Length: 109
Image (cartoon, rainbow, N blue to C red; front, side):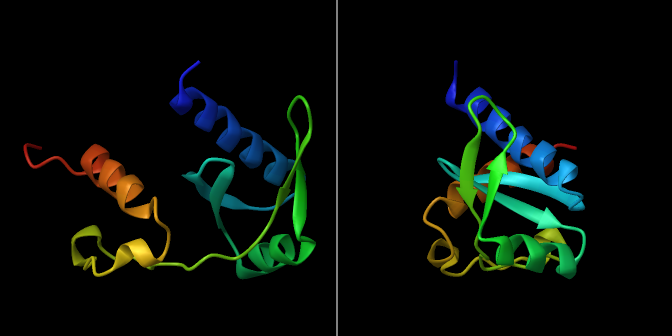
C-alpha cells in the first residue's frame, strides 16, 4: 500500500468521524504523517472540536487523535498568495502547497 493511499484512508476516517459527530467539514488535507488539517464550515464547529482536545477516529482499530488549532492562511485568490517564509507554518506545508497548486493550476489550460 502506498503512502498516498494510507494518507487518503486516514483523511477519510477523519472526515467520516467529523460527519458522525455532526461537525460541518468543508475539506481536509494531510499536514504531516498522522496529522490532518480540517477546514470547518463554522467557527463554532472548529472551537468545539479544538476544545474537545481529542477525537476517536472511526477506523479499525479505533485511533485517538489529539485536536489543536493551527495557523490559518486565508487565500482569497490563489495568485494573490504571496509566499514569504511559509515554511514557518509547517515544515511540510511548502511541499503540500506545491502539489496543490500544480494539480489545480496548469499554465496550459
